[in-house]
Image 1 (cartoon, helix red, strand yellow):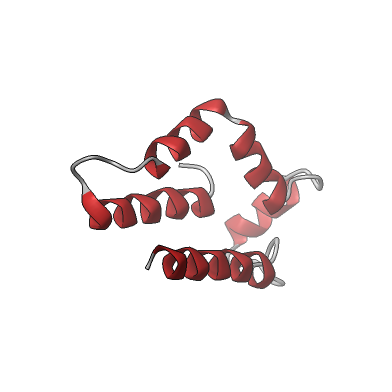
Image 2: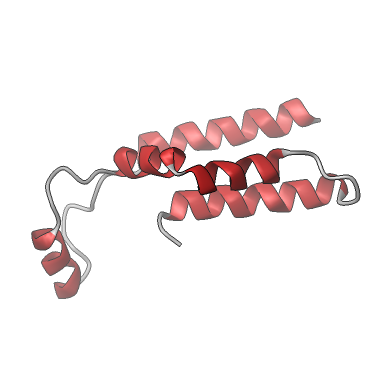
Length: 93
């Protein structure tokens, strides 16, 4: 059961890296186009993910949610995994 969940999560992570682009071809609004003009060209999606994992507090949070809990059970672990992965994929909190 855990291997299936791990395999699906890994597959989804790989798809995220393949499908998501740095930014869309056309900005969705005028404010977003201004934001694109003001950002530095060296800012990237993978760079922000790497910056997250260099942050000690984030790493401790991930380890805390990955450690099996005594009273939560499997359902608690799955919801905790979704929260951590969702917020890490979303970018900044």
